Amino acid sequence: MDANMIEKRKKTRRIYVGDVTIGGESPVVVQSMTNTDTRDVPSTVKQIESLENIGCEIIRVAVPDKEAAKALAKIKSKVKIPIIADIHFDHRLAVEALDAGADALRINPGNIGGKKAIEEVVNSAQKHNASIRIGVNSGSIHKETLLKYGHPSPEAMVESALKYINLFETLGFEQIKISLKSSNVIDTITANELFSREVDYPLHLGVTESGTLISGTVKSSIGIGYLLSKGIGDTFRVSLTRDPVDEVKVAYEILRALDIRHRGPEIISCPTCGRTEIDLFSLVERVEKALSGIAASPKVAIMGCVVNGPGEAKEADIGIAGGRGQGILFRKGKIVAKVPEADLADVLIDEVRKMVER
Image (cartoon, one colour):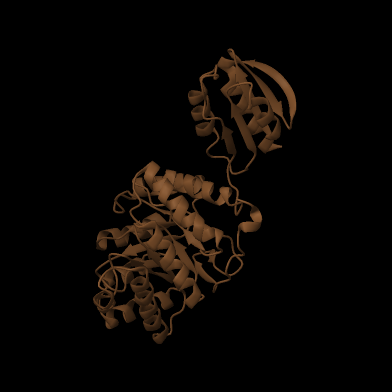
């Protein structure tokens, strides 16, 4: 996609999740969600740290009961990135989570209780200077609105979100961001486009329940990527039935593909064909894994034959073109050395690390 086709991002209201700024002039923020038992503090902390190491900027954790709410205090004391408490059905858990140190809440006003319950949550959020994400999924639309439309259409999702916003504004609370998600990509896109025209609150993007690594990556890349290309969206999560580390990796690849943000090495590798004369699959996997913790974003080419290999490798910051049991190492377009196939991974990894450390 031509960079000129990326529309200027809509300027939304500025809110805060801990020390992370959302909206305004701030960058699009990447977040994920733990899939550990929140009550298991060591496991949850370990997963949050692994997510933080690869660039996750906000983390959401499930709070299904009082024990999980109390565990947040211990978790908060051991991690750096802001924590959003995910609350359903019991507004008292939201209050307890904020008392335990949660930086923000994610609630669905439709299942958290009536107006009085929401008012208690809002008062607690104001007390703790916390923000709230109002989540509207296709499966959790305001009851009256769902009856009006007959099914969870994008229009129903938008109308439901606007009703909730009006309620929060009536209560004097505007530190909110909104998410409108569906497992249907087109509905997700339509709902967010319609909503973005109506208000200037920051939007959290995502295709909910998008699926496994392949299907979820495709759906999320199309849905989230399209909206970001139109200048819509302030935070997002790629939802995968997978280790959440993969969610963050895919998220940054979406941002990279749109030239919005760059984090981590960009690996360019050929799909292989009958001309490939080295074990490129193993080589790419090993290099990618070894470089996954690097924040710098050099372009690294790993090519398997002499057709496009040398040209692509030369265009990269560093790269190799392999064939017949060996490879040529390039740095900034110049040949550095010939390397035996058995040493290609180690040499390339070492060269990339040297480059980013300079």
